[in-house]
Image (cartoon, rainbow, N blue to C red; front, top):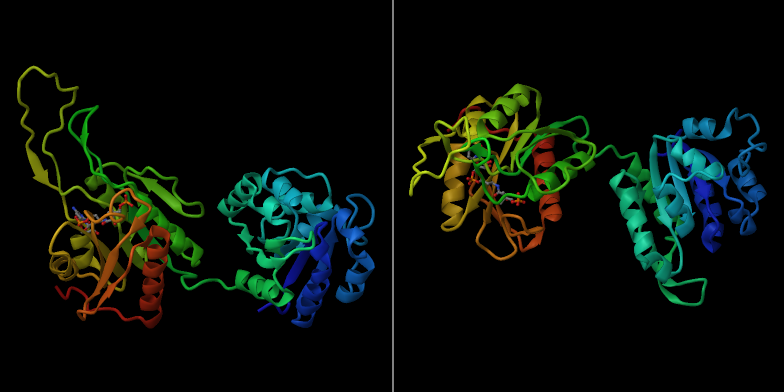
Amino acid sequence: MLAEKNILIGVTGGIAAYKIVEVASRLKKSGANVRVMMTKNATEFVSPRTFQEITGNAVSVEMFGDAANFHVAHISLADFADAILIAPATANFLAKMAHGICDDLLTTTVLACDKKILVSPSMNTKMFDNPATQANLEILKSRGVKILEPATGNLACGTSGKGRLPEPIEICAELEKIFDSGTLAGKKILVTAGGTVEAIDPVRYIGNRSSGRMGCEIAKSAAEAGAEVTLIAGKIEVEPPKNVTVIRVESAIKMREEILKIFDSVDAVIMSAAVADFRVKNPAAQKIKKSDETLTLELVKNPDILRELGTLKKNQILVGFAAETQNILDYATKKLVEKNLNFIVANDVTAEGAGFSVPTNIASIIWRDGNVENFPKMKKSELAEKIIERVANLLDEKKFFPVNDV
Ligand code: PMT
């Protein structure tokens, strides 16, 4: 996978820099075109000449001067790279990268680069665990930078704990994964999240307890698997993931409208949104005054969006959720069949650690052939991965159910 790839390695000033000589050698042997940049501190641990001999390319250290044949070095190096590997990455480097500081060739090149970046931190355990370092890692992750967790073991400072640079073979394997385009590469996935908001008057609405956590995790997981993701979100309490197209809606009617606009062009729909079954028939144009002791609202049924998609679907995979409080399997199975879904994710929204708002869920996936997969309590991010894995398998195997088989 790395053959013909242009790999730029950034070496920063840690004792583990010596291991990167083997990384460079392995990458070169696998057919990659390797260039190395070093911070000045890194040259205290390994000589640039070592990397030059291994890679057959000049090593860049200085911002001004030593990048032979490279015009405006930081831009040229950033353009050259299909991917950048920073290893070992010191706490100082992580802090600079997270905050866009560019005071040497390596940090400037990284800031000028829009390619995939893998960072392999290595440092003393306390430095790694320090909230400042952890916060910097979170910032980098949120921007799509891949982080290779350090290994645990004896450290150069004489202590033992998390902070060791992983072995060269593991670093190379992780770098390979960067070029793996993912199980949903080339696929378009539509995910819905959050609760719909049904107006009573300009200031009041009927809503529900959905936070959007489940749907946002699914969208994130689909994007990480390489899909082009559209997230149609009602009222949500969490930040939607990066790298997905977000369409914000309020009412069920508006959600339906936005879904139908793109339904024909997507490969799969995952409806995790809590769509209101009813809306107020005639929302008041002005704020309702509390003149009487009682207030009666007339509600009318909202369209069942998923059921409609079940009748319209051609080759799309359709996944629904069932938010239940009793007879979970029976009610969910009924929805699975009536809405013509490929599978349904049933959750008991009254169980502790499941359903609305909480970061975990307890769910069962019910299939058309009656097969049921029961999952223990897990993070919504983990459940999202399981759902995406199954959607990818269905798309891969093209196990489509007959059209309009309800
Ligand atoms: O957002 P969180 O706080 O993380 O909470 C997650 C969740 C509890 C909202 C989620 O796990 C969940 O169960 N979502 C589905 C909620 C729901 O509306 O369930 P339902 O059983 O009423 O509907 C069945 C399916 O039909 C759902 O996929 C729903 O999106 C869809 N539906 C429902 C009504 C309607 N008018 N149109 C629809 O498309």
